Structure formats: structure tokens, C-alpha cells
Image 1: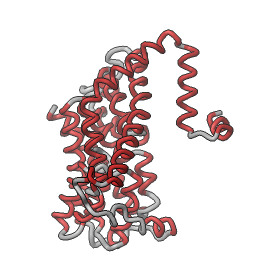
Image 2 (image 1 turned 90 degrees about the horizontal axis):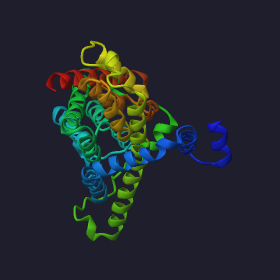
Image 3 (image 1 turned 45 degrees about the horizontal axis):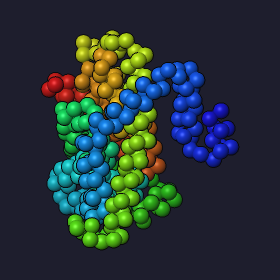
Image 4 (image 1 turned 60 degrees about the vertical axis):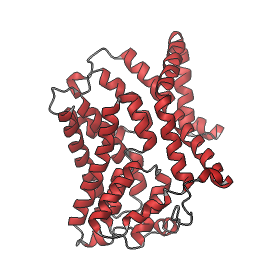
Length: 337
């Protein structure tokens, strides 16, 4: 039905699904609509003071051209390159559209896979806007833990890949296809000079405004239904409803959260309110961290972006490193918290 409506109205699938969900709620639970709207507005107001600076910082990095210079960290000796790639990946607002041509271009230019793998593993987990949103939604400990997990996962991936550097599939990880040939020529940021005083340049001010709006729009699209889902999760589940599955007393809580997080995770911003609701119903902190980290780095969308570029063996290495690193991050966070 959703596909039929989408084809007839020529609108994105997510809009059709959201509209049908809203109509269903209005039809079956009209008394809860107002309460849900109030909860969503209060949640947005609560996270706004911490989210807005992250959005501005992310837009400023892109408008100034600083994101394009991130590629320079991959050049040079392996160990400094891996460390730099892990750090840059964790703090740079690089979206999926940007990271794919940039990484493919670096590999095609002969940059070793190890630092590229480090960046590829650390970049989807967090960035300045995600850091601020995580702190506002789940607390400072989760925000810091998620950032350190991103850096640690990048270091793990880079070191393991460097140890396998003599393998032929590590030396030539890119697929031979027309798709790869098209994207490697689109080196994002390669032709842009860095200008930290971007507000003096009218063209860069336009980029800044557009990036602020694009990020804000993305957050609202993700957070509004996510906060609504959190409200309904709290309304439908009894307290401690999940403690039997992902509670702190169960040895399989973290592996289950990591396993479920990978395919079920759709967006980092949307996952935060849902995770907060799950924690309220018994999910342990380690399981929650495992869900967030594995979902960000092994999500369906992340895998779909990488699979057309890498050969099968490097792609499986990416998945193995992502899952194992997510487990380590979850257990360490559980122990520390």
C-alpha cells in the first residue's frame, strides 16, 4: 500500500509511512495526540541548548573548508596516519555522501587501507552535532563514551588492517566497476581553500546557512518521530519490561543489543530518544552503548554505502572489526559506568 501511494503521489517513502502512522494514531488514540505533541515539543526544547552549538560548529567546519583538509591526515607514516584518521573521523561532520567519494579517491590514489579503515569506522558514530545531541538526550557520560568508542574503534580497525597489510586484498581493496570509477573523481573539498573567517565571504556564508538548515531539518525529521516513539514506548511498556532481555544481570544483554543494533538502526539522531526509553525500561548502560555504536557503524545504510566500493574480503573485515569493536566498547562502558 505504501508503495502504491508513493508512486501515485510521487513523494518519498518515509513521508508516506509517517503520514499513515499519524493517521493511525489519530484514528485509534485521538485522546493521546495532544499529550504526544506536548511531550515532543518539551523534548525538543530540552535538547535545543546543547544541540544548536553542535549544529553551528558542524556548519562552520564545512563552510570554512576545514572538512576538505581532513584528507591530508591520511598521508605519511602508518601509525600517525591511523591515529589522526581516528581522531578526525570522530570529530569531523562528514556525511555519507561525502565520505564515500573521498575514501574511494584516497584508496584509488594509493593511500593504504589502514588509515582509511580507521576513518571509515570512527566517522559514522559521532560528530560535534551528534555529541551535543547525545549529551542532551542521554547525558555527558554517554556522549563522552560514544566519542571515545569512535576513536577506539578507529584505532582498532587501523591497527588490525595494518597488520594484514601484506595481503593482496588489503593492497587492492577497491572493486573494479564503473561505479567506483565515477565516484573517485569527485574528491570532496579538494578544490576549496580553508578560510576560518568564512563569514567574510558571501559564498561561504551561503554554504553556512544552507548547512545549518540542512542539519536542522535532518534533526527535526529524525527527532520528532523518535521523541513520539519514545512517548509511546513509555506508554505501552511496563517498567522493567526489558530487564529480562537486555538488563544488567543477563550475560547476553550486550551481544543481543549489538546484534539487534546493526540491522535495526536507522539514524543516529532517531536512535537517541529510543535508547533513552529503552534504558528507562531496563536496558543496561553497556547494552545501550553497544546498540548505539554498532548501529552507527554497522547499520544497513552504512553497509550499503561501503559494499559497492570494497571487495568482499575487505568488506567482511570492516564488518568483523565493527562488530567486535562495538562489543569491546559496550563491555568497557558497562564496567566503567
